[in-house]
Length: 248
Ligand code: SF4
Ligand code: FES
Image (cartoon, rainbow, N blue to C red; front, side, top):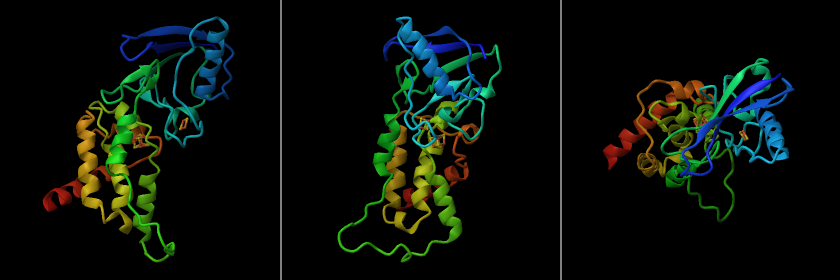
């Protein structure tokens, strides 16, 4: 396939940035999207140009680092996949592909397609953990029975990889899907109850301080989430928040 790429280039956080056109030929449909960008970067380096900076790590849908807005969609046109799992067979010979960074006030661009998502880390640090006394004997795994439905829902919430596609796709740049997944994975389990009140209050407070927008229930986040995190988690977090506020 021969393609035209229109890629956001921005030297640093203070640079204005602009879209730049590139031609790339002989792209195999079996390449991943990131492999296609690797080929482009090899071309750029060989011709003495600056390669395009983009985030990646595991390249198998686990780490949440890859974060591209492709033809106006977070992680591109496929469903249930991250950018690293997107294949070039989803495009046609002669296509023009627009590639931009995830855009949100709380995700400032560092360079080209790389954004700073440390706001997510700060939300996680505010309460996305359980404190466990690890001294003495390890508790038997079967000592605390958990019903299957809650275990499954907690596990589903825990599959959130913190990629930020939910924020990038939301017209309000809301982080509610991400934060609600991180709250739900503990709220559904007995181990999460001890710190439940502080957790939801602190994580929501941090979310607001980071400058994410409000949720207006458009549901776009759920559609673009590569891990299928359900809007049900947002409803659960709202309930948890109300309960915690009434206690306070
Ligand atoms: S909720 Fe989905 S889209 Fe949002 S950070 Fe988690 S995995 Fe990514
Ligand atoms: S590079 Fe790890 S999820 Fe894409």
